[in-house]
Length: 347
Image (cartoon, rainbow, N blue to C red):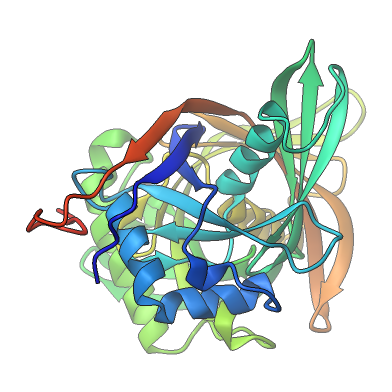
């Protein structure tokens, strides 16, 4: 198919990771009577939705690491909006950095009214459930956003994977999507820009091996199964005891998600998965803080707001705070004579 209408977007970034908001989404995903989780299934089968996604992700309008979302109706009146997150390879189940950007945009644009000074909750339905972006304003401007996620939990510990850099051992946790987590040093790497190419290669190997083995099957919802990303971690400094008796951890990570995409931010849903693992190990408790740094130096602050259960197993509710900024607005046009439509990806 060929979509001939212009597509308008509002582009933001959270900690360096792009988020391209599409307020007028393809009709295939905006019809009545569906949940956002169901809309994601529709989108994966829709030529229209896939074509527009490819148009906005691929070159020359995007790039291999572009990320964005189609705004869709929420599940019910309890949420302000719904969103289908997308990247170059398809539609994801969760996105913390995108939720932070959506909250900032909703308040800054006036879509959700907010006081000049205070905190406003923007409730968003995403494929993995209902999440909240608590937007803090000061002097009429957005200062930061705290993303409260669905319950995050450990899925598996000590899973061995053969890679081109040797055998590694990973833990698997759910933070809205399934993540494999391991120290960067286990692959002989450091979390730094010059090692990104190597991270992409080994991240793909880990994801493919675990998915081939069925190692990340969600216990209740098969739509949430499968490794979405690999989180490589590195300790910046030893945990510090604060005056009030709580601890501050400072770690760095690089997350390789989908088919070799690199998250420029510290990864919101990946951070939630990391917090679940740290909580399970007794290394992070309510009141403690994880300062989670990205490969480009941007920072999320994460904490546990509640201990709970998921599918009968221990879980945590996480709150991840970050900043988002508007980059610009775009009006993409389509010339049906263009032989490179809807676009291409070079990796």
